[in-house]
Length: 587
Image 1 (tube, rainbow, N blue to C red):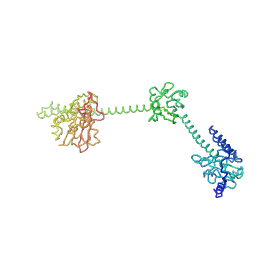
Image 2 (image 1 turned 45 degrees about the vertical axis):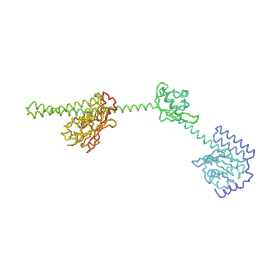
Image 3 (image 1 turned 30 degrees about the horizontal axis):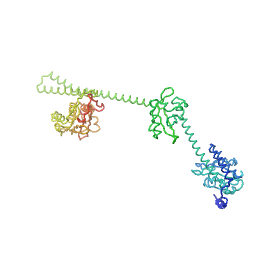
Image 4 (image 1 turned 30 degrees about the vertical axis):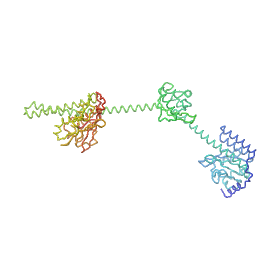
């Protein structure tokens, strides 16, 4: 804007006579009110924007003789003005300025929108702001242009321009009239923007609702259908008109209706469901459809509705069931293969374990039958036969016990076991074996009156013998074994030894039948290989647990936990089977 133009505007504002600022006369007021009423009726009747803005500009032209008015609408994203209404301006001129970019020298309208203030060009032929547009305006008989910004809540919406054929300077009456009609144009543009956005939103919702492949419905808070889309009608096999005569419960199985009622009550109370409602829809032909229903409340106050999405999950659930069945079949096959392999390995190992002592028995029997041996050698041969026979007997007994455990057929005779007395009995029984190996055994328990467990005394004795024997067998020369018992969340029986220990990575193999840990074979002194497998099975059959803690160079501690006699619960006559995947190795 040039200095001369600014001075012209300032001079016009300062030279306006005080009397011209008076209110509109009664005739203007009546005419203004009448025309405002007509415009508001158009708005209320839903007339489009161009019709309303055309009525606004024509109304002002009626009140300002010789004027021609226009409204341009601002595109804020592009910074351009576009045709809104100009009923009396030449169409060629309106087309020429459509898309006018706003700026400080963009004629009256472009400058007014840019600066957000009224711009008066009394003489277009000499106003510098019209330099780029003068050649467009003058041939159409436009000599002056006064433009005012149309302001909305979010800034400038457009411009309201008043043209005259000759140079013209607006008076106070014209300014007041233009101010009123500019406000009316603002109402029309705000109304169009608001209801245009609402119409656009409604159209998007309509398309998303009607064209959606997912079943959708609007219901009242009681579940009565108000609107359904074609996808839902096809899913349930009922025409939309039929669905609109009923409610959600009518398309659900009777057993699923209570869940739907709870869903609707929760929505009415303001509680959003945490997950979809799984329900079964009943089609018109009697078939059922597995569906997932998600719902939310739309609207507010007394105008609240339920937006319902219904997804057919029949195929998905069938696929999930098929995958689950395949997984179960694969797991069963792997378990069967593992069991078969373990059985084969156990039979192979068992045959080897039986063959060695049987060969000894056969060999020494042939020796006794074919040779006349001295008494000392004869006695030694008989001793070897007896030891081998006992080993076979122990091995067969252990295998039978394991079989009974796995078949849940091991008989138990629960009673009260004095662990202190039992520990002393087992230590005395094994003392000769310990003495031959140079093993020191001990306990701090009294000879009687120690902690009492609720268990089968014979089986607890069998467990303790296995654990103590294991501690002696896998120990150093002149090593030690200690047995303790205490009350702690039941009754705890602990057998510790000062042996070489076991790497933590191998501890889990202790309960595998016949498994030989690295370095254990050299130290093995004749165990059956089933001791710890039996220990675990027997302890678990008596509602207890067994664990082993060990580390190289720190020895090993086996801990058995059994129920206390004071808090005894009945133990079933049929034992719980041992976990087939956790067995023994040191026995």
